[in-house]
Picture: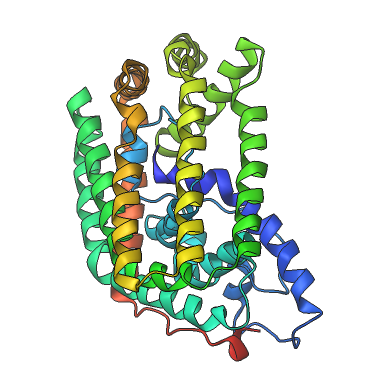
Length: 367
């Protein structure tokens, strides 16, 4: 799935669940005023919840509006959030990237309930990631956006979609590799209680996923997927005519046919992650060995056993076909609107590249 779906799927959790967790912790920590209003938007203690959208690797999201499985893996979710606002749907999302260290910290805290001893380690790791990402990956993202802006006016082919999919996976792979040393340090400090909390959060997310995307009523299941597909299509191209929407609905069926298999892959990935973190917690191996285990998990993440199944290939092909169909049914006006949208994201990405990364936020200053 595109990382942007990961972010949109988690927006309410970031600005709802995390904020509830923050309020529970306020009683045990000194009150503070945010250093600036931006901190409230990114998960500061005092702000009110806001609706926020972000898209990472929008070049991929634009061409892959057919959404595949939302991967509920802790490691993937952390680093998706870290990179989430790299490509911004509006100036608010540029702000989201600027304050992404706060956002990422509060998401991690929600999943493991970061201890006082773990907090400096976690905040400093996040700051290092953003400093690297700003320098190493924003230029690559800007290049992808330029390609997408040029391609969006042309007929889209399956090869075009696959190109952006591959580029997205490469960016995610590099991000995960960059974070491995810091992630290994954090895993070595997790307690059984924190791992149990993580497992509980996975289960809660799975319940919501099943309710939304695995409805027993086939019509409701298709409707949920249609709504998600249109969310991304409208983000890039704007509104669609009733005839266009009818044509898109007619093509949704193949995308949802393998929903159960995708869900099973999602759960298997979660279990693989939990197996790994429990092994690290129980054996406390050297850091180099933990990094090696993370390498193996990365391979499992990007090349799960289910990927060899015919159903997995059929699902991917159905998503690509739907994406191509949507792109090629758009009008010249819709394509022009998409180009304008990409240019805004390009401008925001270049502006972020010119900025300096935030320094690590110490616990005393942040809380």
